[in-house]
View 1: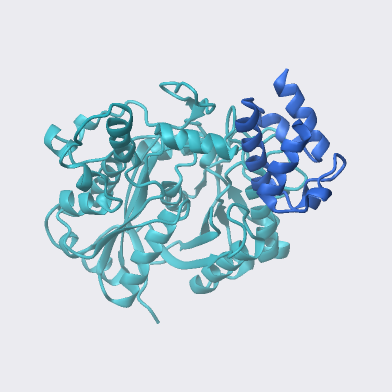
View 2: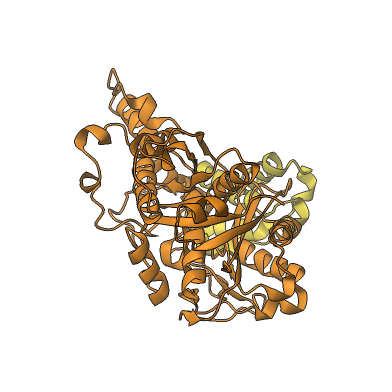
Amino acid sequence: MSRSVVITGLGAISAAGLNVADFWNSLKAGRSAIKPLSPAVENVKIRFAAQLSDYNPEKHFSAEELTLLDRYAQMAVIAAREAASDAGLEIKDNPLESAAVIVGSGCCAKHTDEDTCVQLYEKHRKRVHPLTIPKGMPSAAASMVSFHLGIKGPSFVLSSACSSGSHAIIQGMTMIQSGMVDMALVGASDAPFTFGLLKSWDALRVVSDDTCRPFCKDRSGLILGEGAGMLVIESREHAEKRGAKMYAELAGCGMTSDAGHITRPDIDGISGAMNQALKMAGIDVSELAYINAHGTGTELNDLTETRAIHQVFAGHAKNIAISSTKAIHGHALGASSALELVATTMAMANDIIPPTVNYTTPDEQCDLDYVPNTARQQRIDTALSNSFAFGGLNAVIALKKLTQ
Amino acid sequence: MSFDTVVEIIVDTVHCQPEHVKPEAELSALGIGSLEAITVIFELEEAFDIEIPNEVIPSILTVNDIMVRLEEARQ
């Protein structure tokens, strides 16, 4: 029997709120943070986005610190600080000092990369800033979280597109289960609003021209978002010993790869990951209460995810409350899965299911209970958080309410 | 002229036989899925310096549909 792993701290920064309290209030109220892209970018078709509002990096970091912090690393550190504080941990002290840091990211330090390209290729500058490498290295967020919080355990960044956050959380979970560490700060961060990435998403033609409407007949695609979600996870024994408050048990995980189409999700890959997570968590398919869906608002995702849920849960599928919070916080790519686990944890802790907003018209092919538009008070003992990435990389996390 | 270019782009994208690319041919039968379709459209936009809007893409099901949208965009 492997060690039980629990969630003891939460941190979030996103368009839906710059901290967990504001994020959760937006989710509960069903308040979408999708707005016109600001500033509008010339020669880019994308017109709507979920961007941080009223974010001032200087409120969080000194000018000297900012020379080393790409936007994605800033958000990772801010969310990590909040999670550590929420878990009652002292910065640069044990047990945080010996924890692991695993940060997922789909895009990593693209702001720094593209700024450097502009300096070199457009402005024909002869030299770049001397800190371009440490600021722009893909692993920068893990280094910066380790650096700012005084964490000296194993630290690294991993990348699996839109599943990055879930893979990072699962990595930390298995390190705790193995006994390698007692505690880990895990999650993901992504800052995709750069000219090059906007043009690239334009070219893929999956971004909606107005808003994100998951599982809805008049869906028109995804809406990009930015942000970071970080969680403190630790062995239950360790959390109990230090008297930490515990939100939920990180009870199971499932990971599969489609080995198929580069962008089209696969029912068997998705259902395989859900089945693995349920099995590991010891959750019978007839008792699952809630799924925080991947729910991007693209036809391919929403139909495939719905069919996979039918395949796994059969007769129980229609009893499960399912919501996609992406219509509220946008699709923050790798960070989405971490933000969504924060959302799922808060949902379980508060017994409130955040809604799928912007839902207007039922789709006969998406025939499940998507908790449309209004949050629902409902006891949640068991939940899944689904994440499916381009490239066919699927990761599902199972949570269980803690029993005393 | 335009049709020849469309055939060339489709053949280069999905490596099908040129003789199969007839106006009435369905794109799915030529091996053109959603990703290949946006690649073909991208190549057409580049070749003819035109813009084909996202909202018309779901209605492009045959080679002739491509020709129609191409002509619309060129006007």
